[in-house]
Amino acid sequence: MITVDARPLETKDQAPAPRVNLLLVDDQPSNLLALEEVLKTLDVNVIKARSGVEALRSLLSEDFALILMDVKMPAMDGFETAALIRQRRRSQHTPIIFLTAYESDDLQMFKGYSLGAVDYIRKPIVPEILRSKAAVFVDMFRKTDEVKRQAELLRQAELREHRHQLAEGKERWEAERLHAEIRIARQIQQKLFPAAPLPLAGFDVAGASYPAEATGGDYFDYIPFKDGSSGIAIGDVSGHGFGPALLMAEMRAYLRAFAVAHTDVAKILSLVNEALVSDVDGRFATLLFARLDADRQSFVYTSAGHQTGFILDASGAVKSHLKSTGMALGVMADGEFAAASPVVLEPGDAVLLMTDGIVEAHGGDEELFGVDRALEIVRANRAKTAKEIVNILCASARDFCSFRTQVDDMTAIIIKAESAS
Picture (cartoon, rainbow, N blue to C red):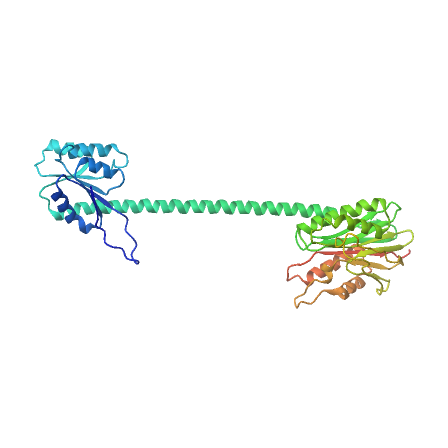
């Protein structure tokens, strides 16, 4: 068996044509050479076989656009070879043109056509006729191959599109699940905050918190003490998002647990710090914790590195600065926390506690919202309820940076000592 590649060389600018094979079967080498010479202009691979056995062997590894086969061959003639070719699924529909040097009677032609022959060509062969007939089948093979290739490309494109749609669907599902989880986390965190103002005779106490993300690290709370006084807490865990929110929840749990057995705010902060220091993992938390005794009108606090608070008198003037009395929580296990001197709240006094997210809110020209602006809002609205003042203050800070993304959590508490009736 001899294989000859009769395709012209391909250039870089020319896409390679689909490979097309023609099988020539004849026991006479001179006939094979003559057929090859006639067909060399068709740009095909010519594979030559000198017997039916060689032809069948070629069909095991190659597909052919056309088989040109001599009828009269020793050992296995063309008809016998064609019958075996048709038994194989791969070559069941391969076109066969029989070549014969003898006059073909009707019975012989019928036998050939029944075996799948598409034509008979008598020898001597007219080159133009053979070339034109072979060209038809070569063209059909190439077009069929192109259809198959395009169908496969289409199948692959549809598969890619299907996978893309599945990926998009999965992405949407994961995003929706994440949003649902975030919504649930926000709901859970909001339930950790007081749902209503603190009901305390002689005082109007309210707070609010607005996280920069779905959840945040800010915290405020009202905690009852066993002696009847009330604990007021406001805190800020560094950062914002899920991590600080979890640390905030842990801090809240410790604070409430230690407040059951103790009323000394400095002692409570020391215990909370010892409990937190092994869990903060590089973070820290600021916390101002105060005890408000309604019977004595007394306010005493400890501040672990928290934003300065203020006490304003009835005229709106600042009468006290509630500065930090110790380092932030979680920095050192043996951190010291001292309580400030008690302050008696007079009727008309207002206590402003807030986190740095309000003070450091950025405006359009990088101007900070600042302490003075916060104090002025409290002064201007001091006749309103504590809840109204908190809402106005937080709304003003959020509006101040409304054209930008809120970069930090915002939390505030207002404590108003009510005037005597």
